[in-house]
Image 1 (cartoon, helix red, strand yellow):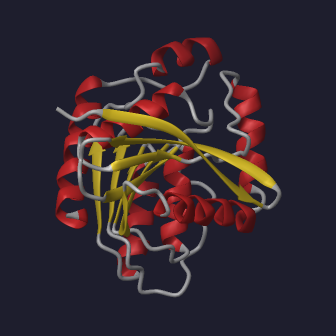
Image 2 (cartoon, helix red, strand yellow):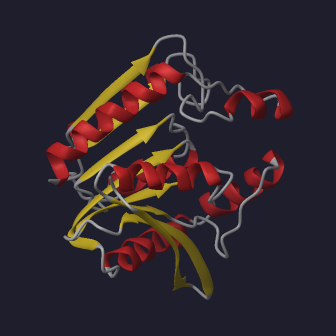
Image 3 (cartoon, helix red, strand yellow):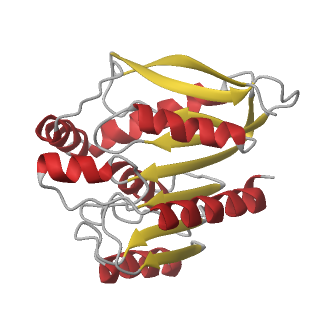
Length: 244
């Protein structure tokens, strides 16, 4: 059984202190690939930290990156939207934060710095796709219910990040036609991209708290246990192929 250890990892960029959360097997004995966990627009929530633990239990070093600085997190959808839009309004700063997170986790003693994966959820999935489209290299990237609007353009193909996209067939923030178009663009630019669309499934299907947030904020969210489990199992199989 893995003995999962968690710790806060602070790193600096543009005058901000970023506060990520690391999870790893303290008894692993050998360095493991890092897997960035790129959060939903709520920030570094307990759910995102659980996903880092999932990665640690699967043999990786999970690292929830801090998208906003100072470890900011909120349960308020309006505040989350403000923070998200501020981050998206300055892509260069957002990319610098992402690269700073990669640099920080590569210094961790539990990490093999030569191997890097990432998983991104909702806003975080969009960020991951944008980074890959801009040429930020990952050995493997998986996204879950990633929004499709406002992605960064493709820069300097061929793209060298293999990508797996998991999305809902009834997700208004990621219509299947848009998901397939984005995947086709990236394939044309040289990327290995595979798409899984779950029929009848809405946005945020991996988050067990999605139904509660849907009622509270009137958002088109919905958890689906089967799609959550299937997408996670497919991701672990993908990572075993690309990161081992």
